Amino acid sequence: MSASSGFRLAKTLGLAAVVASAVTQEYGAGINFVVPQSLGVYPGIGALVPLAMFATGLVIFLKVFLYARFSRAMPRAGSSYVWTVRALNLPLGFILHFVWWASITAAMGFIAFAFGNFLGNAMVNAGFAAGHLLLSKPGHLALGLAALWIIYGIHVAGIRDYGRLVVILLALVVVTALAVGVIGFAADPAALLHTAAARTGIAFARPAAAPPFDAHAFLAVCTLFIFAYGGLSGAPALSGETEHAETVMPRGIVIAWLTSVVLFSLVAAALLHAVPWWAALDLIRHKHASLVTAPGIIGLAAPRPLAAALDLVIALIVGKTLAPQMVVTSRMLFAWAEDGLIPARFAETSRRRAPVAALTLTVVLASLFLVQATYIGWAFGIVARSVTILLVWLAVACAALNLRYNPRHARHGWSEPFRRGVMVVPVALLSIVVTIALIRSVLVLPHAPFYVQPLFQGAVMALIGTALYLRARRVAPGLAAVTATLPLE
Image 1 (cartoon, one colour):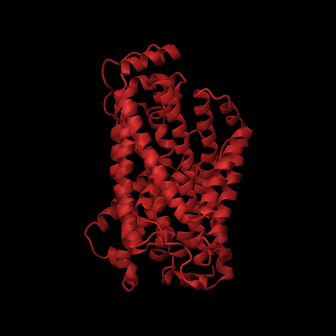
Image 2 (spheres, one colour):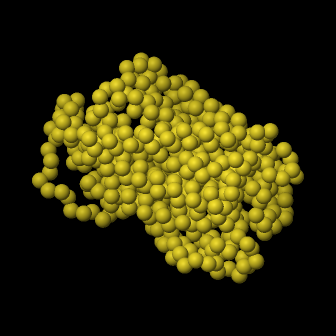
Image 3 (spheres, rainbow, N blue to C red):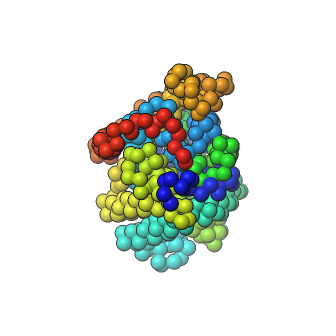
């Protein structure tokens, strides 16, 4: 379809698909490692891991409020890129979102690699010898490429098929989370620790008293959990393909947030009930951290056939995160092409109304990052994602304040939702305080080489983004004029 023919994306999605896309991007590998990721890094958190998960979810409401408000004012496929460019300025919005886009694309390659770990271990635990093949480097690469390109095929087939897929995956996520919750709370911790002791030889001993409250550890764990809720940032990317997006998208973001808070808190509480925090610490310190992941605890607590089945489902849940991430990255390219920052072919769609060029570039780059993760062992750009999630949130908060108080926006209809309502200013100000505090905690990784530092990786990608912007400005000198109006989609 040509750009002159009106809408290019198919506006066919409803509320269920919006909620499903957000939750399925949220609920992935991270929640299955909630215990070792928190207690293993900050043992002072003790039994408060579930409370930290719930408290983090409440803090995320600040972001949810802003994203819902912007989705009502500017429901476009470019989501936060469109918002920040129109409310702040084009160079800042593009360069920041280029770094974010690159980090998500890199993360797709790493998730495709991790999918092999989860599925291979699940098959080995279920008694399938083929699982060992998947755990080899060629197996990781073959399975990861298959996952990426199958999901690419679903996207190319049209957004309606994607919507059906994520609704099914949402049902799978909810059933799995509830199953983990039931098994975890039904487990007898004493019997489970007896089984763990027989497997590991560890003599578990309950401490005489609970440790005192460690505020630093609690806040640090909350910082880690901020990124478990990072998938909510991607939901508005479907705005160009959602019917009545100005009303459906805000509701979908709020419902997805509520669903994620409930599921995350339930799973965290169930896992820490099955394996008390002090026993989990012993397992982690004795190099048995795999036993305090969700699959590990289910393996200890549930009958073998049920545990094997849940392991396979959890592996699928990890892999399914690729589907919504491909939406975010491809629609960002679509939005850049609409604004003239990259070639117009990336804003063109097929007969099925899919942005095939944008999807193809995304899957090719993700495949290259998968090769890097398989044969080099780390993926450039992933660690920068933690910083860019917070920087985008910070920019969105500043954009809300600018729409509220900058007189140049008074004539723009999209500023109207920000010029009324008592919550906009306090939520934006609190968001600025929270994001700046958290950015300081993740900007530098202690004891890590410079090339994996978020600051270094973010700076490299920002330089690439700057070069792309300067090139686009040379090709189209009137580029800044695009910020005076909203893109069609």
